Amino acid sequence: MATLWINGNIYTMAGVGEKVEAVLTVGGKIRSVGSLADLTIQFGPMIDKEIDLQGATMFPGFVDSHMHLIGFGESQLRLNLSDMKSKEEMLQAVQKKAAELEEGEWLIGEGWNENLWERPSTITKDELDAIVPYHPVLLKRVCRHVTVVNSKALQIAGIHEDAANPQGGVIERNVDGTLTGILKDNAQELINRALPPYTVERLKRCLKKGIDSCYALGLTGAHTEDLNYYGSFTNTYKAFKEVIEEDMHLFRAHLLIHHDVIDEWKEAGFRYLAGSEFVEFGPMKIFVDGSLGGRTALLSFPYADDPSTRGVNVHSYEQLQQLVKMARDLEIPIATHTIGDLAFEWVLDAIEKYPLETMGHDRLIHTQLLRKDLVKRAKQLPVIFDIQPRFLASDFPWVLERIGDGPIDYLYAWKSLLNEGIPLAGGSDAPIEPADPLLGVHAAVSRTRPDDPEKVVYGEEEKLSMFEAVSLFTTGSAHAGLHADKRGKICEGFDADFTVFDKDLFKIHPDELLDTNVIMTVIDGKIVFQK
Image (cartoon, rainbow, N blue to C red; front, side, top):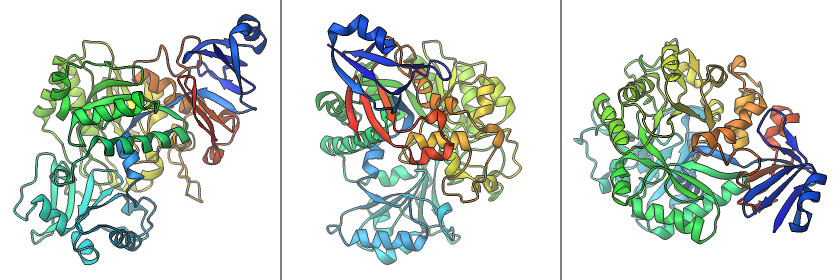
């Protein structure tokens, strides 16, 4: 039998302003779209249910093109440090949390960001030791490329003052050689190995929390990178399958495969895009550099506010080339974390040396700092840029001090990239940024920070139209996952995934996005969230 969706602003996203009066869905697919009268005449006998949208606005299901779904769920179960406005406030929260723990239990916090503090400064292990000496403490910076730990955690992990920096990582030290407690990029793995092991049940709990939160934000799916961080590729994949397919916690999960687990993936007999309608494998993920916040993004020039560094390369140039060759041997595209311009250049070199000869395209994730020569080269390749518009609201204005007068032509320059013909998809990188896609849309169309009373615009000429910004999370994400023929639009034959808002996004001021609500989230024709 069929369901008829009526009485709303139904945007197909097949073209600017294109709307239909009604949608008919059958068995998780869109059977037909058109006028209410025509659909009623043509399909009347098979219609057994009507959904009255009551004037709300329906879009194709919004999909986050880059996040960490398990990490997003887990961050909501941990100490949240993202809203702290000072180091003192954060330390008080840590001390309070420690009093609630069992003896010896790990205290893990997420999201500290010194750029939001009244007096930005680095946290140290000595400060943590002073308030929590008996519990191991691990606090992840908002970018997840920097972690600070206390002495108890260092002791458990076996990190001593004579420990060498791992490839692609930094164990930070004071001038006298003593440890500060700060670990950057690959050095974080030294502490991660000491954490208690994850069980399938714990992973499932985090997944369910993450998916439930996505429902409330109107997300019907995500391209997510989780398979390498929880001790077992097999258990992590099993958690996805059990939660989404067996427990019917419906969600479209496109799984990026970290290169460290690609051998396990291969030995299990998987291939690119293998899986189901709900859980499938995407490209091979490679981290090339770090973050701007931690000054570990790899630049072709010194940081303006710290000329002693140009960032961190997670792999050597030669190692990166070999990882791309490995992907090609497996007939799989790559998805690379590339923030700095030199990291981007290294990836282009590798793609040009080992071009993609199978279906699909390579994905370059983040791509905030680019030069004209790099964009010119990228236009000749089968690539898509996977951007996170919300980064603008978090990174400006301090990012301008980081790069200074460096040779950057495209600074979070999404309009220019679209004008160059570069396909874009939109994500959040949650839990690094909030998962709410409307915050990403707001950043893309306004180029402002929501909390800025002055409403300073960072790059007026780079504002996207509302249609372009919404496309990032609909047709853009569908194209990124090779599903442009069945997702991202409200068209006949497409999946019945919808996101319904209480306001018409195409008729409101951008700042009204900040108090727009999700009324309904629909996956496979089923209402999974309703306000």
